[in-house]
Length: 83
Image 1 (cartoon, helix red, strand yellow):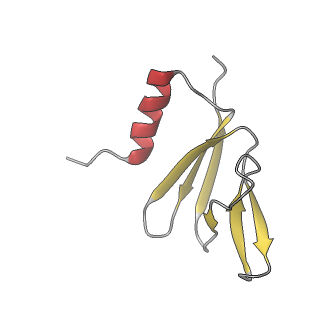
Image 2 (cartoon, rainbow, N blue to C red):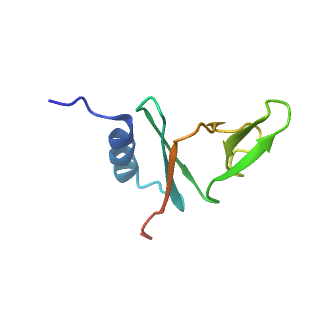
């Protein structure tokens, strides 16, 4: 039996609490882990000159990027259904 994922637990929690932002973003990392979060403004890639690499960022959380983009990452952004 597979262990429950954090992404599935987050989906259930959103249903139970009734909280929903406009988009659900899932980042499938190269190591097989999945990072999931919600955003009202979507997600984008920004070049960081200090680190000389691309970073995944959303304007909902302007103080820090989500994570560094790595080759072969898959970023999925899905619009949540309206209540």
